[in-house]
Amino acid sequence: MTENVKKIYLVFQSNVVDSSEKLTDLVKDWYILSKIMASSSDSARTIYKVSEDESTEINEDDFNHLLGSSVQEKETQQLFKITHEQFSMEILIRKGRVLETLLVDSPLYHHLENILLDYLEQRMISCGTYAYVRDYEEYLAHNVEDIQERLELKLQYPESIRYMKDDKGNKLVDCSQYSGYDLMFRGLALTSCWKMWFSENYFYVVPKQAFLDVQQVDEVKELAREVIRVTLYNSPLDWREEANLHFQKLFKKQLGFEQIEWTNGVGVLAEPYVDFLQSGDRMQMIQYQNEYLQPVEKTKAKHFTTRIFNYAQNFYVESRRFGYLNSQAYFPFELGMNNDCLAYWILNTDYSLDKGIESFLYYISYYLKAKKMLFQPMRQKTILRFYLPKTSLGTVPMRGLEDALLESGFSVKDSTPGKELIVASNRETLAVEFRDVDHLKKDVLEWRLPGNTPDEHTDNMEEKITKFLEKMGAPKK
Image (cartoon, rainbow, N blue to C red; front, side):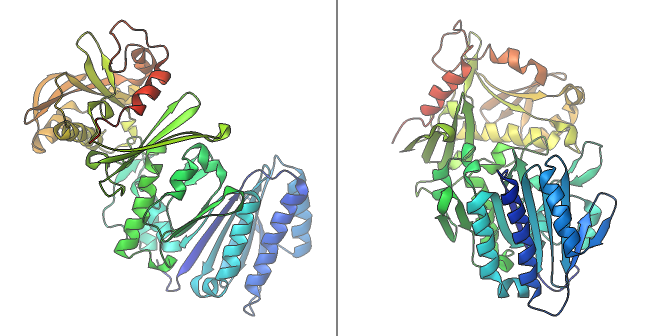
């Protein structure tokens, strides 16, 4: 960062507001907040109407007039901005919702902290989707993708950076790897930072009880209207402390945010702490924990918390057990007369600088490691299948992947050019296949869950997956 004064960043996103009057009140409250913030100094505020091409300075009468028209014309959007020497704030009005951002110097923030936090909290209880407060440098470090912009901002964290390509082939930073990345999913911000508020909208994706049970945070509290407030550590300015970086990372992992949505085409390339699966109108969430019931990577799990839920139907079932994961936890499907065991991933390596070598190597290593750690050795053939878009399938760097596997200590026993590799590590082998993602729907019809006969039809795969996950925890101790 180029400025010496630390800044705090606040964000609020509303739900669709059900009346023009309430929407108007929201925007007027935002305007009043700017007056309160400006009253602490002699400097004046400046109000702007912002469009794609320019920012036009307006007065309070102009603001009130434009506010009335923007609220009535719900299909249009209006952006207002207020600047001051100690803060800047914006409000976007669009289709009955408001999105607010506030950037404030940390001395002023701490002077008005109680007011600002209460402002966000009351808005969340009234009509909020999500809100958060964080150090602005932390936000930039985890969310600025443009390489040149990061250099200009002099961002020094994190030291290790992964890169990817965008849709136009431009190189940028893969921020999806970072704990504080604002991953957007169905209008929800799946992020991790100093203080966060989550509305009931999140409980359709992650069960409410999982938020309330979250570990290694400073505070988790349920407010009115099922809003949940989470504080990770004591002060937003302390985000660079090693322990706080750990808390930030663990919060996101134990709720499985990284497993819900990807933006880089290949995932975070790290072991999951959570697995999700949708079966019909119900979701299943399996959280992996050690013998002390603390969140851990899947291959280290000794305890399993399974949550089956449908928030819309007020349905929630929870089970907890000690044990070991069996082969079905990693290779959940069988196919063919020989009951070959199958795991699969849908990847898009068009975004990868190396055409997917790093991601292929990671997943191959992960499944071979899992086979070694199984309580009971696997006798059947194991298959790891990658489903890729046609554009990626035709450019799979098989020779480069073989070289990377050899350099990592694996051996490649056999291969079918462009279609299959047989990878071995000590006594464990893994057949690695590459297929067109357009074939996935047809292929699924040939899969079955362990225990079904080879000729059993698999039209109702979702129901069978549900039954499988309920018993996935393997033998109890």
